[in-house]
Length: 286
Image (cartoon, rainbow, N blue to C red; front, side, top):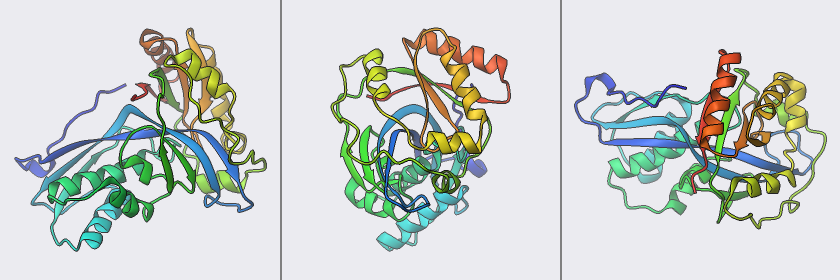
């Protein structure tokens, strides 16, 4: 559980923009349609959390890192007709291909950062339009706040009254390709099955609400990576846990706890038992 660190790229003396790329945790995921890949229509709630990658945007230099980040930067140049350069240093604190939208959040932070760096007057809706060309769940990360998403991720509406809660995220170090999960999907519960009326502002009510939902992608992800079951069992065995589920298409799982103390204690216990797992306490951004 290392703290976020700031790096100055190539000894450049000026850091123009430090952007925290807030991850999105995807739950629930409802799937409708007959396609066998990630182009299916979905319904899910993306919850912004304080557990993130650090993106540093610096002027003058041209080198960057991270494929999604580079694609986002080039999309910004093309959309606004800019020839400006920038160096973008990405410090990855989140596991890749893990079902928490880390790469999408990085791409969205790149859009926001370059808009500020290049003094571009724009609106979130315009950046979300660019984001749609980069990935299904990039648009919701542009504003980094809790939202309902439908379709392929392009239909976004604000999710109000999302209760604050302390959580623990765990990834067993296994990358689960989204395409394979969708290809193995057998059961689709369908759009419209999730009640959008969120509960009162407390963790227990949030957990109770989530128990009425399902993640359609959990079963196929478990078949691909059975270790996800071990992660869920470990989370559910911790004191003070209210709910444990898989996030998005996996393999990251999360648990909601009664308070921050319980979450921190659980994170330390899991990390001690599985030093090769990525374990991170987090909290929902309200």
